[in-house]
Length: 298
Ligand code: GDP
Image (cartoon, rainbow, N blue to C red):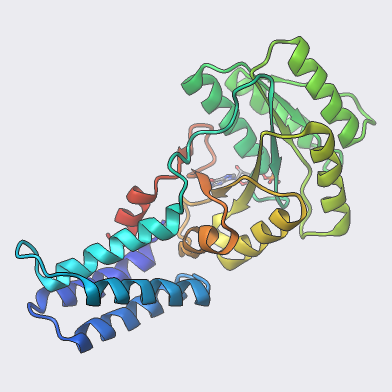
């Protein structure tokens, strides 16, 4: 994750920290390079611009302390600004609103983004780390094997899935999940909705209908982190239409350029809660802005 961006920024900052006393021009040149590096990582233009502006303002206003060189100080400002852009005001990204059982969590996203895999990963995490009793239900009546896929994952991780009843529509399944979660004493139930290859009216109407009966405590958009600005557009669309409370970026184990992570919060106002780091059931981590900022800066 972030290899290219990290490499680019590393180069810029090496030159900066070696320079000793910095002129205004040195800082300007460095920031221009930062902007280019961000754009190459598929960060959206307004976000890259705003980022550089914020750093520039802080760098010119900063009092030079004796313990660090001016170059190191600029690097520190960039680091802090990265955290600000990544985190927003979300203090606790790994925590979900799941008090008041049974708490419904709605999982939404496009087909192939990793929704079903992430549903199971999240169920495993809630069960093992928080000791929750979890129920999963697949509402995907479109893709023939989707329900079985979730049931198999449930068996693997030891989490119950709602029994499959052929021919039911997603709203009916969501209602059945709610009843079952209440009767069975579950703390949380995860609703894995169907995806489409692209956002279309039918998909959105279906997700809205499910949302209205489930009244979810959290609605998490699962989106492929490798798709850069497309991931951000997808999040905007889902947020406008169904309202999301957070984002899970998958495939962050791949050699993505990292732009989706950097633009997501600034463009959508919604926090990244988790990142997917592989196909295995353990490969889901809390999104930690300071660690990610550290990784970006290498
Ligand atoms: P859905 O259509 O959105 O439900 O997508 P799936 O959950 O079926 O995932 C599609 C493919 O992506 C599967 O082969 C998953 O194993 C894979 N996948 C999901 N999340 C990740 C991830 O974080 N990293 C990697 N490398 N693969 C993932």
